[in-house]
Image (cartoon, rainbow, N blue to C red; front, side, top):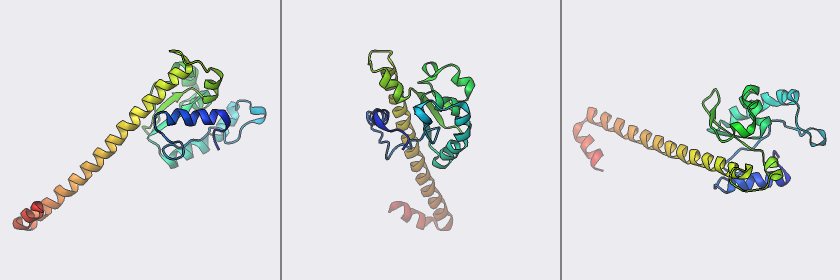
Length: 178
């Protein structure tokens, strides 16, 4: 289980606030597959060790959007150069991975628990902006998927029409009239 306790509950509530269910709509995972002893941050070597597993998970799930929570996930997937800017500076801005997936860095839920204020510009307020942006793109992608399905169906109908007209124009008119 990637996120447990209060941080996991908060992450679930963040996604639920924009009607994304972490059990149905999202695949949630961690960079480090085992939490380091004494709940310390994973080292760069530990992140490097698990990175291949994470990349394979992402390849298999093949999400259109990846939400990175916190500096470790950001460093692992976007690289140390990007992460040097710090999560506070890069969160909320879309990036793309080499496969074209949209990537949204956000604050880690544990950080939000340590910074509970909700005033404008606070981590929680910024995370609310970030998750609403994720929802906007999810909706945009769903519209694009629906449009692609509609276009594919239209193409099938047009091809059927062209075949029918080529075979027998009278049959084509009957097909189109039905």
